[in-house]
Each structure stands twice: as structure tokens, then as C-alpha cells.
Length: 164
Ligand SMILES: CC(C)(COP(=O)(O)OP(=O)(O)OC[C@H]1O[C@@H](n2cnc3c(N)ncnc32)[C@H](O)[C@@H]1OP(=O)(O)O)[C@@H](O)C(=O)NCCC(=O)NCCS
Image (cartoon, rainbow, N blue to C red; front, side, top):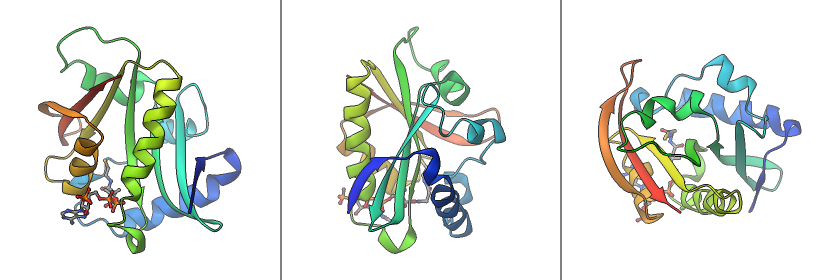
């Protein structure tokens, strides 16, 4: 197994994994609908960086680091102060056959190092309160729950924060 940054040449693999994830959602409230604008920027380093776990040549898990307020701006409004140097960990996905092996945690740890190297100070994540695997994984990373809110599109989310 190997973790590495996803490149545009991995786009098909990522899209295939997203399809598998969306076809196998246990709870549709855990996964926000993908917006075309977000997808357009999946390989735009100023907006988004995905890291993936590979089993041989197969992409079996991926998580993104978002550097743009298009993704996390709404959450920022619910945090206390005017945060700067923010990034969000999101779009966590692990192929159903590989779940429960701490793959999400290993990917998150990699993203944490990437964020530190980029001098990010505030790492946030938003999770549905009942999404236990994500919650356990983000708590293990040292993130702390700040508050709960309902997004403008109706999705309930807890906001987690880690100050780096
Ligand atoms: C959320 C998701 C990425 C987790 O991936 P994963 O690699 O299986 O997660 P991990 O193995 O790191 O599990 C994290 C923890 O949750 C536990 N866990 C996993 N599934 C669980 C379940 N159904 N109930 C309770 N605990 C569970 C694991 O044992 C692990 O606990 P540990 O740290 O004590 O060992 C995966 O379930 C997924 O792709 N879900 C669909 C997409 C989605 O909803 N994404 C969330 C968007 S934020």
C-alpha cells in the first residue's frame, strides 16, 4: 500500500472511486452532493489537493485538503474569530472492501503533514454527527468539536478544528 498525491492523470481512478462510494452510501446525509465547480478544481493545487491510498495500481481511498472558501467558507462563519491560514480536510472516501483498516486515519495523518508544510494554522473538518468512523478518525488526529450547524443546503454538520 502506498499513499501519494493524486495528479490529473489519476482523474479516472478518482471518479471511479467516487462512483463506488456514491453507489454504496449507508447514509446519504454523510456525503454532500458534489458540485461541478468543486469537481472542476479537484486538481487545481491552489484550491484542492487529494491524497490517495493505492493497493498496487488501484486507488482504494482518498481524502482532500481544501484551501478555498468555496468549500469551507460557510463553516468559518460558525467559528468564533476571524480565522486565517485555514484549510479543510474533506471528501473522505475509502472503498467499501477496504474499510475498518484505519486507511482514513493514515490519509488524514499525511494531510496533516502537508498542511503543516504549507504553514496552515487552522485545520477544520465538517462531519455528520452520526458518521462514527469519520468522527473517531478525526478525534484520533487531535481535532476537537467546536459546534453543530445546519448548512444552507440542509445538511447537519459538526465542525472540528485542529490548531497547528
Ligand atoms: C468514512 C470512511 C472514509 C472511513 O474509512 P475507514 O478507512 O473505514 O476508516 P477507519 O478504518 O480509519 O476507521 C476509523 C475508526 O472508526 C471505526 N469504525 C469504522 N467503521 C465503523 C462503524 N461502522 N461503526 C463504528 N466504528 C467504526 C474503525 O474501527 C476506526 O476505529 P479505531 O480508530 O478505534 O480503530 C468510509 O466509511 C467511507 O468511505 N464512507 C463513505 C463516504 C463518507 O461518508 N465519507 C464521509 C465524508 S466526511
